[in-house]
Amino acid sequence: MNSYTKYIKWVSTFLVLIGILLTNLNIYPLNLIFHGLGVLGWTYSGFKMKDKAILTNFGLQIPLFIIGFINLLS
Image 1 (cartoon, rainbow, N blue to C red):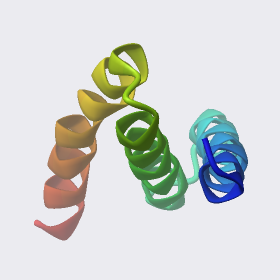
Image 2 (cartoon, rainbow, N blue to C red):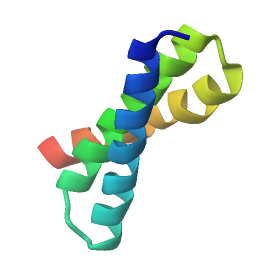
Image 3 (cartoon, rainbow, N blue to C red):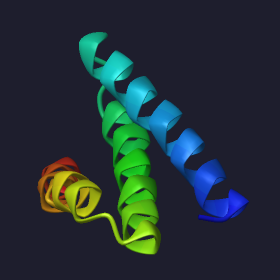
Image 4 (cartoon, rainbow, N blue to C red):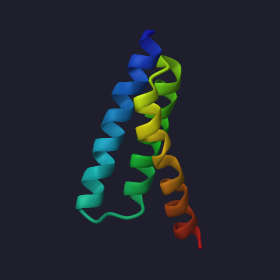
């Protein structure tokens, strides 16, 4: 794993945590944006590392965030 992937993992972790915090504070839609970006970063990292557990966890969250963004825009 290269340092670029490690950097993406750390940034994505903080984005997910900020998204969770914003959800707990009921700050919508900013929570979707932060958490969604973190999920995309973790999915990318899981793909690069060929880690099926990470891909399953975060990859399956992507459609849920797409639904949230569709609801936000409609």
